[in-house]
Length: 143
Image (cartoon, rainbow, N blue to C red; front, side):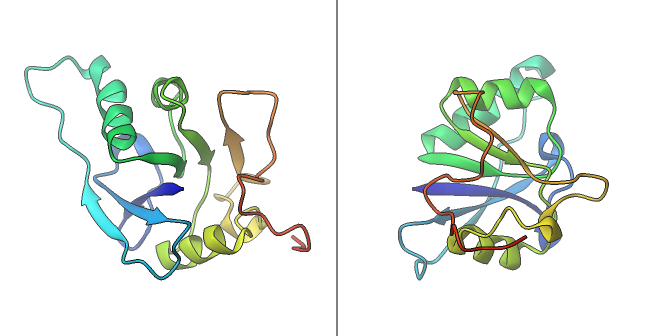
């Protein structure tokens, strides 16, 4: 599975909507080189309300199935979910630590929650599911 981490200055970007780059991680191959790539810029003549769809389409076209990010607006969240991309939001921390936790299945630890948040939130097409068990979790992990 490919996951994208929204990044800024070596950390998870505080707000996905305005982050400039993402790190694409192949969770099936932990030793693979990860690519940090820029999000495409919204053209000046394109309406701003098209930006959420364009960013979601960019991630989907790169094979991303899961996005790890900080805060995110409802418009971006809905665009991602509409394309079948699962979302773990309100994550904070250094990119390499978050990447390692994602690969180890320990991303639900409170140390990765944004300040003021009690725990990361997971969103997917099936809105009733809110656990962080996206095929990588370790059931023996304690918070």
